[in-house]
Length: 294
Image (cartoon, rainbow, N blue to C red; front, side, top):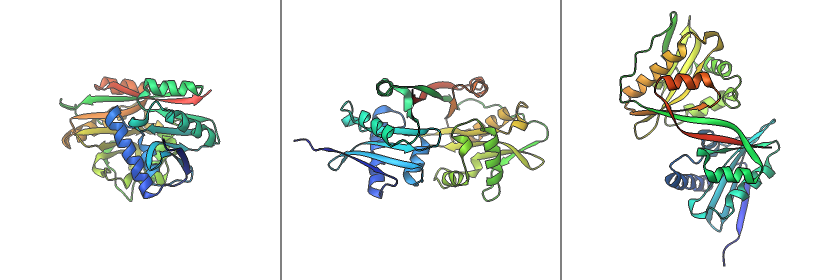
């Protein structure tokens, strides 16, 4: 006789539950060859937040699926992952239904890689595509051009304990219309700086007369993979070639640190950014799609 499924909803997970979700993610990523959840969800998994809920579907001691809900006033964001050994058994539908039930505002759900199964699941709940995030890559086995730094601009590395507030100001201005990046606060920045991958030597800031006007935060992964983590320019400094200079500064740094390829994530409708990355050899290799109710 099969065991009954149980659904648990909690604002915080125990250490054993967290480890179980991490193992579930690793199992899914090994089969799907893509990340099961995005970085924001992983941070919330390890560091509880008042707006986050965790949903676990289990059968006895076995974790079959996990979903995370980040509640907002205008809309809420969800992500979910199902064990590769228990797919096509209604677990994904159960998780999505519970996300809808628990959400206090219209729900949007990320589909990593936008697979056929994810599209079908979203359609079954009447959800439609709302946002598209491109994952772009390029090799770093060629000569990256030396950056042409605009007159009056200095580029240096980020100084922890000194640059946090200035960075938050520029980030908020550069991403004023971005639904997530614009909301990054001091706690979010501290969380990322506490991660094992954080290296201020790969975090570049541009200044004019000691005032920060742009930045390129790079990230070094395993397997010689680098990342254009966040690149932002203050509106007052846009259009003068600073974005190109910061991009090349970061790419050269990643190359010097041993990266042989580099990835980035960019909104598909940000044509200026997409064109910049295309012009420097990046190509789209995958895409994440956010589906929304109605």
